[in-house]
View 1: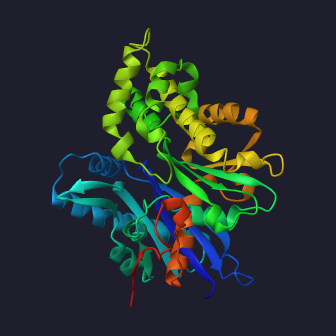
View 2: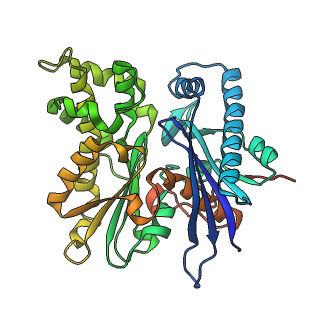
View 3: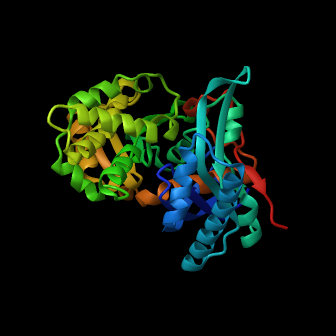
Length: 398
């Protein structure tokens, strides 16, 4: 093993753009330790509107041509190559390895019967060969399938980074990523890797963004401004929280398959039927924001409190928030209001030295480094896999 400069490339379920995190990753300083990670720079680039529309259409399509999917896969490869090249130039470093998560267009972590056999499936787009050829750098991509094949959910994959960078001898931490989907990693104080718990809690920004697009023709609720003007329809939130996903036991994962356009149509219809809210679009957005917060708080009370919260008198609990949703003041306010009475301190990822938008890019830089040296990158306790496995597929550039 040796130190490498690695670019981690992430485009999440919000499909709003690409984040590139350039990191120097070095072997452990002591035997049995974890890799050392230093963030050298982060660059975020928005998708062109036409590309974002194509990605969202592919995610929610009941039927789409094979030609469209093939072209989108190659077009995304070009976008990722451009993003890495721009980051390399901006920060003046020579990248030796790329870890590219790709764009998830379908993810089914639980088995369902297909053609007579129980089947799991996942698909991340973005042709790695394009990146490798353009940059003349080896690329590790497609990280989910190895965990899925080993019986896991193929998600979440960020917990390895959470464990390496943010575990503490004195503080128990719950690390919340507010992307399109919200996911949590719980790392009790002084925890070994087998004590890490992680799962998707439900929608993060996905439902809020979709409601904003339909009702206001905007991509997101900037700062939570629209939500602040609306009335939360509590009955709608409670009805949805009673649906099976929110009570099912971890490990579990979700995506647009559960909370995409079909769900949003049903959600808006439920809000419209609520007394007095037929024409109040702001109430729909406020309720979508409250649903995200309430689902996270329910997950903490139901699954995480017993894991980290009971140790609070001995080790304080911190809730560390990252992702695009960290900029939504209305959402952060609801989370803070719900967590602080339980003795949980809410912090932003920046306070721990990593920009909120960079975290997932850093995670895939780490996973690429681990894969390059044939080291496992999943945490079976988090994904449900039968064993720890080396993640990703390597595309070489000769």
